[in-house]
Length: 336
Ligand code: AVJ
Image (cartoon, rainbow, N blue to C red; front, top):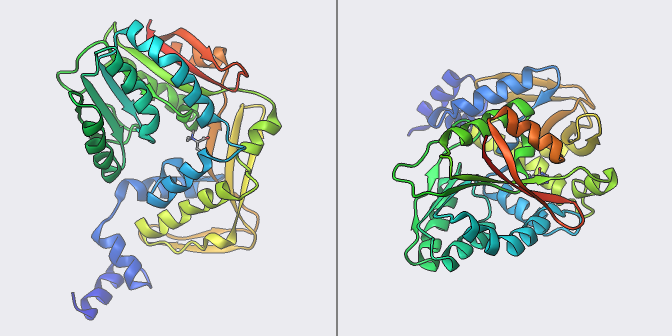
């Protein structure tokens, strides 16, 4: 494309920076644009946490899971390793449908238990990232001969399809405590979608981070190496890349605190000086110095709060399995 037409498209897209406008024009991510527009026009500015996870964001999250302060991942992994070899044969699981397939490392614990039980028929990892999924899929096919791997690219916060020809009993897994990133009404909608997909003999396996000493929780989101801060700021780079905006990540401070009333960690980005951010398709968004933007909530649960979410979604707790220190729990859900 010639320079003159680049400039023309930039003018039509209404931006001063041709490259940014070109990106926004060529690949208008309309859902993202609509979510960002809605979030940034609210009195408390807010962005959806799913936008942390581009390639770099996923790397940073992997790094978080290895931090000494971040207990959820290793606690959940230990629970899975100790329990799946017993639970999977008990349930007779023949298909694993994993919502937000994240690190396939945890899936392997379940898949290995299925293989051991001789019931490893099908694995359906669902994730927003297609490249990640296809990489994982081909590797797992090699590691588990006889296992069918059928990845689905989908945004689980929006939709869930029951794959056709699913063998039963199926296990729907939603691990990592990611249910905590959803406000309760959205968490209930998500669980309801799973419930609607489930047959009576299917089960849900949910990982939830538990309520505990506030200092322990806050330390997990304020690590001493600043990895969580980099992860938080990375969302601004994702927006710049996807929407052609001009956020200056270095102008924003990482803030994470526990809200005891709502039982949740909140992560924010706070500009130390006033900011004017141009977002093609939205316009100029102003931040006063110190005006925070919320990037994530991470709700912490107990058995009662999970039972309430389940009840609202037509599910019940069949098994409640916390680790010995009650940091994290795995929950088996069944139809009411
Ligand atoms: C894996 C999405 C549940 O909320 O703890 C880690 C993401 N955010 N550090 C969480 C996260 C900050 C994590 N989830």
